[in-house]
Length: 259
Image (cartoon, rainbow, N blue to C red; front, side, top):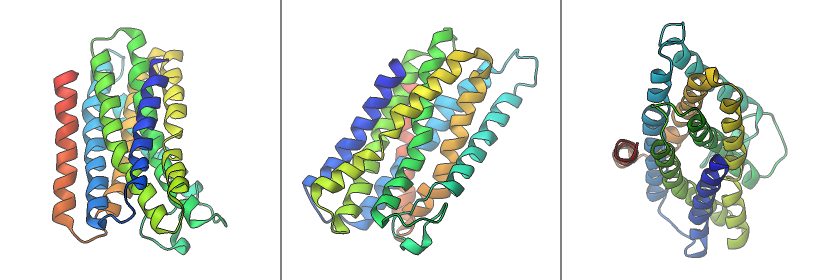
């Protein structure tokens, strides 16, 4: 239930970002790319402080080298996202419909754009769900404050994500209401992934370090494969790089201060 509530919060922040489409139609591309880079920085920091570091702690005394569970889970998360990336039809912002990835389909460009954002909301929801599921075992490395800081960090970076999907849809000619609906729809997958992540670790405690590092690997895959390259397309690499560092710093402070 905590995982569901937390991921409903992150979904709500996505909707709040998408709602900015009611305020304006034109936004600087550099601004959108900077917001996306900021989100990438948050995801990188969350992958280590909220997921990998606790996974390493929980791997001690498991009868295998301490690095095995985080390594297996981390690489497994990357492979999982690569498979989804090859299967799910989606289109990254700024590309032509002919450059869509995944299984070939006749879906409209707007739908493909929404599916691209939905793709990297899956590991975000899963990460929050696993973090809250870990609380059931009362482990020193799993704290309520840490899980809340992760949900808060994901929520913060979901705002620019919702904004970054609804604004291009508006420029494509969709109405404000339709742009908002599709923008917030991209975050709907987070409560689903969050509940699945929490349920997965509640079934068996031994999978917990694997599940945490799995979510970290999935998020890093999304950042490297999609978020950072997409944010750099405007050519203003210095601005987007600093935005990513700012996002990293914000999440680091949140996790260290609250976790």
